[in-house]
Amino acid sequence: MKPFLLFLCTLLLIVFTRTESKAQQHFEPTWDSLAKNPLPEWVKDAKFGVYTHWGIYSVPAHGGPDYIRNLYEGSRTDAKGVYSYHTKKYGPLQNFGYKDFIPLFTAPKFDANDWVGVMHDAGAKFGGICLVHHDSFLLWDSKVNRWNAGTMGPCRDIYGEIAKAVHQYDDMKLLATFHHGRSFGYATGGMRSDDITDTMRKTWDVFDPEFHDFYWNQWTGTASEFSDQWKAKISEVIDTYHPDMIWFDGLRTAMRGDHPREAYVLDVLAKYFNDASRNHQRVAICNKHGGEFNFPEDVGLKCYENGRDMPTDVGPWFLIDRAIAYPWSYVNDKRYRDGADYHVRSIVDVVSRGGIFLLSLTPKGDGSIPPEEREIMKNIGNWMKLNGEAIYGSRPWRIHAEGPTITRGLKRTNKGEEREQWDWRKEFTAQDIRFTQKDNILYAIALAWPDNGKLQIESLAEGCEEAIQSISLIGSNKQLKWEQSKKHLEITVPETPPGEYAFTLKIYTE
Image (cartoon, rainbow, N blue to C red):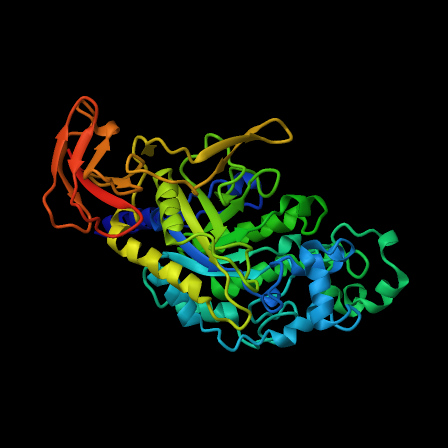
């Protein structure tokens, strides 16, 4: 009996060790090792996320989140009219610099539960905020750097409150986005020493060594100290809040200047993956315009801002991010060019291609979400509640689309490479169909409602690969008549559409 028990214990130990080894994958601080982190299934299933661009720059509400750069470096050209706006409203720079907005950034109407509720009700399966933009002000209670929302401005742990609100929902993951990799020299931009007068050097706060750990430039700080801070800030967020996804804005150029050092970037990413592996947490990093702008292209989830500069062969998996309305942050007299229809059709198109869609809200300086954005989000949510089964957990079909409307345009880079720019501001027709699939169900989503009561799908004509068993229209209880011919599958639909924007046929196949 004893030998048998010894054998059994040894066998169980081997199985347990192998299971643990498999579950706890170890990553080295190299690009090759980091590229081996598989994209979590939850990312592939989630499809839709929401975050925010909100910070000190939301107080002046002019120009956008690059206010700090346009204020100092752009003072020579009055870029976006920021310098003239600032000096007229707040006074000359020697009296009121960018840092002086911090006491005004009290955010009395910020409510994390409300923000995350708006995201969740819109159908987002992951959400968060931009924790720090190029201005380097931190929206969490940091022990690493004094310029943070926990000790200044609102004196609240903004991201901590957001994280707590996200974790109230079992079907939501936590996102963190970092943009401070471009902060070193951002405020002063292309300024050279010859551009800086004695008056500027003596009276502008951006050149005051007292504020070197906020404005970060070559005249008051060092790239080495900035690099240390960059690493410490992200490590602090990982250790404190454990986000499920981290998104990074362009680091490649910054790494070339050692702000931050490439070794530090590798260390942070390896730490993130290894910590998550030990905690059995499946995490992802987002690689915006990988290659020349960020990490090597095979590391993380490929991301493309508003569908621009995309390779012609992009496929599963990738992410498209954009603002609900531009600029990226709230500004006075903001115009909302696009409604929920535009965003819904974008989501459908992106998902059909094997993509993820990330939308940014632009809250006001006081912390409130503009009513226009609430309305758009509510209407997106109404569509997702009805049609979400065709989106969440779906996978691309053998083709992603058919129809006459072209959303892809080609352009050449300065290196002669072809890149795509996607454009969803089109007049779509009922012939424009997008496809997704899940289990034995094919979803055909029409991007407009037919005037003649007929939806026709050429890809499902007689002789297609799929054996169609039944067809229904999501949101309608009417039995549909359908017929296959050599030209197309034709479905007779009700006179009144069930909902708005895009309309989903649920097709059961063998």
